[in-house]
Length: 389
Image (cartoon, rainbow, N blue to C red; front, side):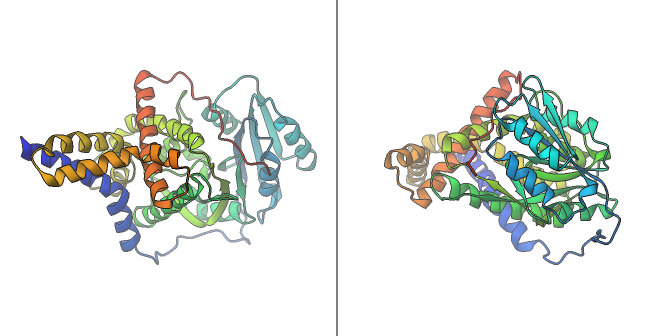
């Protein structure tokens, strides 16, 4: 019995380490750094028309800066249309947008009378947009001057269906969880870039900003969270190529409060399990590049809460027969307690906060899974708190 429990513990512990350590290190260290670039548009080419699709709900703090960044671009303005769906905003969002329409008539505002949810907004805007390339983005994601061109240039290659931007998290301070989130996203971007180089796929273009051909865009089902992951996996299912462009830079504010990030991670978790059920066929054959990436980068990580519990209970039983497992069990107890310790101390100790953040986010994953099992009645969202500009 002890041998069986020990095997279960080892397999579960390795699965966690594989997703968070082995897979990222293997990709970063052994992915070719000088991949031959596919054919790309230049500024001298006849560039395609672009429809930028954005859902907004009570974004008065950021919407003006966002629109300004869209039109402060090296891309030809006569080739850009900005479609904004206001999801029953009840602040100054709509009036701010209408002020910008006076300067840029290619802004198309669509006001929804009741809360619809991001995916419903995007589906509706995609039906209205006639451009051959879409850029999907969020209201708090600020473009640089070359963001649009760097995304679009890859579509000269007819095999390319989707291009992910390099989202850089920014914060005026490293208080709270800001530092941990910035480090995590920076690592995620490196992983996605390596997946793109190695297999021409990435495990989820971040919904903050990515481009996709209209013909490869798939409407997101009702009540689905994580529309970006749904659309990305649909592109993989179609057998098309996805590019991650490190030079297609956008800046996004990161929440400092762990409570805000916890709520966001719960929403993400719900969408994760919705997408896992929908795209479970992409997990096989497991030796295929996209399937291996799906398992390693996402599925094992989504199941880390359960793996942690398995490790906890198996080591609890084994510690009565082994000093090693008594020590391992003690470390796990300390790990589970770090969020409470971090909150009580109220001191920004980097290592402690990273551990605390890890356990809190896995708790959010677990809570999201429970909500998923109960059934999702609506995907209407409440944005995280925006920093005033």
